[in-house]
Image (cartoon, rainbow, N blue to C red; front, top):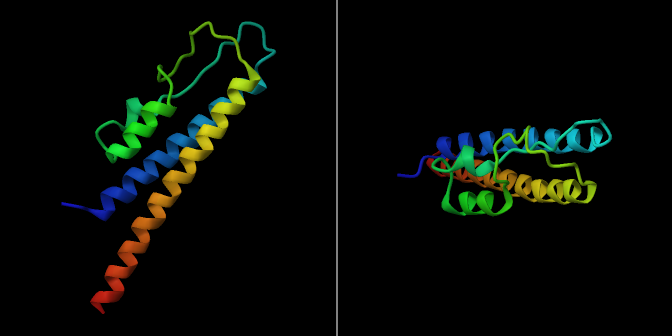
Length: 115
């Protein structure tokens, strides 16, 4: 059965992951000239698999990365790649905010109809 509270909770958790990923991507760009620094990233698919809708899971797997925390990946920072990942992250943010907003609107409608 559909539970709007679970939907809001999942959306809130997704927004937290998006914020953490944005911070990590920004850190990659900030540290690109630091000797010995390797690229780090977060994979949404590892965190969200069973708890969100199939559409979000599919999107997170398509847009996410292979490692949750790839601190020791030996991968150098490529500014173009980081900026592209930041844009993908923004699209995921847009999806998540629309989902939470839609759920709140549905709850408001249900409350107003019950009065």
